[in-house]
Length: 409
Image (tube, rainbow, N blue to C red; front, side, top):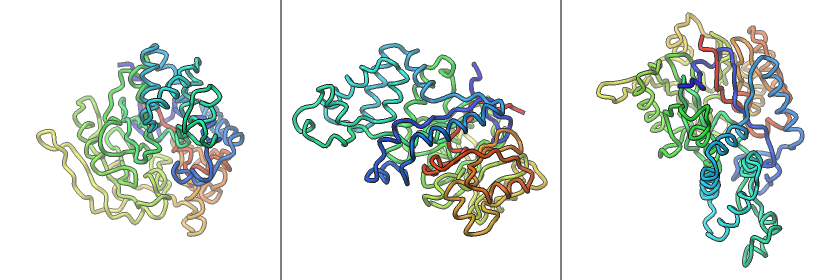
């Protein structure tokens, strides 16, 4: 085992993190496609890239190695050789919903003609317009006369949020079946990393994207070497959590004893657990008011005969966190300082969706100034990053990251 993955905490010093710098996929967003592509607005790409670079530089300034999914996927495809490259392109086109054999061939020829593998990966993420095939003389018949603004393959703008397509848990990972059809292709890139990248090809998977139930990484938080919390949400199904727990407990090398399934509101603004709760210090969590009223939390443990046991916990979120993290007291720091208007406004721009880079130090959007001030009053160091465009995607610093390595202590 290379131990290329090591993640036993939400707050232990972050050493290596996976992100995606936004690219031309933002240019292929239009008002008519926003709803289907799960975006609320069209970010200005130039500024979004500047903001993301500021985010990456803030991480580097704190000693964190920043790696990009486009680089890892390209390295994996190159390591696999010509056969894997063709396999990747065919799979990507098929999962993009291209059904016409003729158009599938045109798309394959177009993508395969891109010699630089990183450019190939970026183009897959950006999507393919009919006009790009027309320029190469690749379309005829009905398609030759159709609107040049028609996308043959949709862009994947939500890949900005690397928290969702996969998750790292201990020395293993989960590869996700995404809830929305438009996001299913996001986990293809991590699939090839875990199959073919020489540094990650031996990583054990506790969940695979071919399973029937949806699960997304924004709902998964590794709270300690014993506890994994998972949100039962709009995008993570209870059966997925059960299957994950079975797989987790079958691994004799794993240290985890408990999976805590936390029921959260089934609403767009509370789409994942990390939009309503993230850990910011050993004994502190940033939370949205809504999660404090949750009455349904389940403890999942290893039962007899390889089956799992699920028991409802009749305690408040605060008491549950204190019990399972072995703490005398846990502070729940409210979004917007608990004031309704401030909380609703800053929840919309992910006020409590925070990436902790070491205990008591987080990265946050500068626009959430009320929540940031509240965190500081509770002893948290807040590193602010610009956010006018990145926040349009409805995801914060936690959503945009996937921890690959944290210190185990």
